[in-house]
Image (cartoon, rainbow, N blue to C red):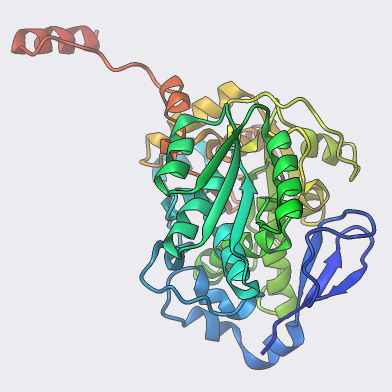
Length: 418
């Protein structure tokens, strides 16, 4: 069954055939939505056909994806998604929430949410016979492409700002990707990667540009639906989901996943989706609060490098993800992000700044009355804290250094009690 029917522009609505290899709308440059044959999927599958599958990773949702089975069993590529959901009692008590879940995307093969998009994009690249996949990244998207490409012998080229965290650049290099550091910011790396793809015929994975990225990211919504809404019987009360936002592609993907489920008749109520941005990188939040879909660039400056973006490439759909679900956008400071890293850490979840941003947004939402104690809430941690050790160390006190003697230890313990 050919599930992939074509593309539809998110701005003008123009539809294009699946036989065309497109990135954005030729008419207005709008982001393209993948159009699936929902009617055929409904005829062939029921919800139980998906939830009863044995595979634990995102490929269990293959009937709802616009690619064929890529194979590669037994590799990290095949083990993307299926991330754990925690429900820390300590945080529930402190936030006065009856139901709280944290979905930890740091458990993906290269330790971030971006693995979902890269897996589906690589599957598409294999289908169309592309020899090279290229992307621009501050680290996570590049690491996701590099690691999963390495697993399936796909050549990958990564353009990254030279200011990207060293731990993320190390990942790119360890995975043997061709890494090119750009003396500029993410936006300049993005533009160069698109030019290079057009010039050399490479397949471009860029977030908020390649329409298949959102199809990978929507699989997180499928997992939330299956693990929380179905198993916890939460469909009678809308779930509130908090996610950090940079380019806007993750929140757009989550929204797309839930829209697909509603179209299939497998979900009755759309969850409320809350986007959280750093005060220093707030182009999408600004548009939302202006009640506008016009995304005005900012001069991004935040400790959360993964969501530090001057001009978000998927801003319109990201605004709609909140406006069409009765959600909202919240802004948090870098200090609040650092505090959130520490708060998540004390319950055993190690988050990078971008991931902790979502939790900081939840704290603000509770304080402002947007979220009530009876509201079920899920927070997405988009990446592991090992991605940015410098930020992690800023979030905690330095460990003491003592002499290796019992006397020194007793002195420290005595002083510490005081």
